[in-house]
Structure formats: structure tokens, C-alpha cells
Length: 359
Image: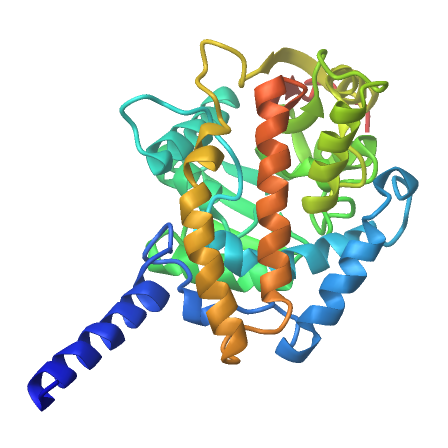
């Protein structure tokens, strides 16, 4: 092989590696790239140990429903997965019904805009995003409604990412993020003109506690909507496959125990809310929300090769491969939960705080 051919071959190989590792994979080009994967606020040398601690803690989810350390381990979970989520999924860490003719990104935005439409806020009003992640829904909702959105997340790394994205999107005048536990929020009573949570309150050890706290910070007469992760009427405790799927979802998503669909409205009423509407947004005519997971299997394997390479050469922290593998297995459980109909991530409940709410 002459020198020109050798040079061209080397250039093609180098270009291919760069494209495969640095370009291919990110769901949103303004988000994370593979070479920037990290453990969030966890130092690189401690990612593996924190993963092992996380997995040990959530191995038996039914035994930790009242555990005081659940918030700490949810924080650990999001340190471990935030970069991988952003890189492979996007800035909105939730599902949405598939919309024929629409991209996943557009379907996600439509699902988010519906939440703020339901609570009927006006431009300039102040609303709460309880469990905001890196703020994908917040930005879509602020741009759509022109309301001022304040998000809260327990994970400090997500706060930094959200603020960065808000500024890049030119929405930092409408969006703000604070670090805190949504079970003990740093807001005064009757602060917000509305509130929403999108697949976030499932991380609370007790739903009553987070609903009561959201109720407290809302103004009388304002509305709250939540998209909840629940088991459906098709779930059977005595079915071994059902139990395996639900526990797989719990372990892989830092959940202290999935709730039944019948628990949601009852809990909302218990803390004082009036329930305006309740509906599983995943049911027909909605198209399968899990189709995105099935279609993404090839992308997973491609991304997994990238993660293995980056971890092997020391760019990605040790333990990243384990975290990525855990998320793939969880995606399989989520798909099975959707296909069997025993699980939904979008059980919607719309509530109102009474005008003469008891203080």
C-alpha cells in the first residue's frame, strides 16, 4: 500500500471513530456528547462505588417505602444517569404517546404543552415544576405559555445543567431552578398560580407527602396536574411475570415502590385537592408510548459500544458501562410493562386547590 492510500485509509478510520464517538448518538445536539459523559456531582473515581451502593439499596424496593435515605439515593441515581439520559434521550426525561407523522421531539413537546394548557395559567403568572430534571419540560412550557416557571430538583448537577440550557435557549428570564427536596420545598405558602409534575412524584416514598407540599405552596383556586407512574387494572400481584416487570422498573428507575392507579385520586383528595379529571393518557386512541424504546434498540447497542470504548480508554468514568447496561435492561422492563398493559407512565390527574382552602 503506497503512502497516499495509507494516509487516506488512516484518515477515514480516524474520521469514522470521531463521527462514531463524538457526533453520533446525542438526541439533541445542544445537549451532551459522548466524550462528556460523567457521574454528575460524583467524582469520576467514585462512580463505580456509588453505582454498587445504589443497586444494593434498591434491590428490594418493597422494603424501602418508608426509608429516610430514599431522597439521597434518588439524588445518586440522577448523578449516575443524567448525562446518559441527555446524550441518548434528550432534555425531557419522560415518555409521551407516539404521534404519527411527528418526531419524538415534537410528540414530547405536545405532551408537555398539554400539561400547562390543563392548568389554565396566564402569561406572567408563576408556576411550579415539581421535579424538573434538566428542565426540558420547563422550557417547552415557558415558551408555550409565557408563564414564569420555577423548577425544583433534588440533584445539584441537574440544576447546573438546567440553568445552562435555559440560558442557551434564551429562556432564563422565564425559567429558574432551585436545588431542593420537593417534600420540603423552600417556598412560602400560597406562592404559585399553578403547578405540574411530569413523571416525577413517583420518586417520593409517600405520595401524600409530596402532594401535601405542592398543595401548600399553591394559591387557593389554582390548579395542579401530574403525570404519574402506576400499575393499572391489568396488574396482578399473583402473576410472577407481572411482579418481575414491575420490580425491574422500580429497581432501574430509583422508585421506592410503584403505586396503584386507584391510589392517586384518593391521595389527592386526602391532602385537600378537588379532583377535576383523571385519565390514563396512554390508553387508545393514544399510540404506544413504548414504541420509542423498541425502535431505539439499535441505537442502544451503538451507544453501548461508544460507552465501552470511552470507559476503556479512561474518558468515561468506571461504572458508566454498568449504568448504561442497567438502563437498557430497564427499558426492556418498561416495554414489557407497556405491551402487557400492566404499567403506565402517564396516569394524568388534574386537581384544584379550593378557593377557601384550609390552612
